[in-house]
Length: 280
Image (cartoon, rainbow, N blue to C red; front, side):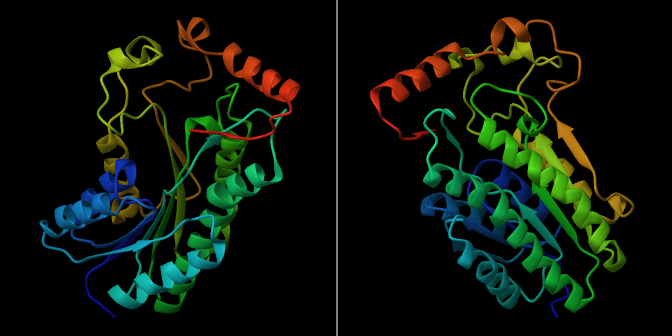
């Protein structure tokens, strides 16, 4: 078995996944990551990771193809020799009204946002147990698993399901000293978009006065993966600048509780017979 620790991150070609991959590479981990279709981004991420003096492999996978998920984890283990950290990050969102939801919509959301996450965790845990590794499994969820939004009954529901499952997995895997935790990001600026171009003024909505940075998530992921977090398991750590605190921040109610335009679109689609999902 390789001496250097290995981290596998799903959805590592950009955004939060890339940030976590780079931070763990800085900590000396060899890195494996998956990407969906952005091969140029995957090549760029691999080059940045290897600049830090560690090894890197990447794999293309659509997470809704559930039969491929465990095979991808097994391949990473074969290529790099071990898995110490599994970061279940990849997600593909769709927003649609319950009035026009289809079986295909629901299958896609359930497969991508829940089933694939559990299958990744299970495949990684099997290798950790067999190899005697005191590992870490992280799920990247969302404040949408805890907050309520007009358009996110499926997305938010699946994120909440992952957080609930995390707690059971933490108990099941504790005898092997495999720790399982969630990171729930808030409004994270994953693509360096200026706040002034956005529909909602996050500097006014977020109590700490800014959107989150990819690094805010990556630093926490590195900590939870480290021996410094050896006594932390079954937890959901929200990184959101106090956006989702139980008391609603001043200004939130004016900005965003009820998306009337979304509701109207759902009604119009229902009336017109156009039962199809709106992808975002």
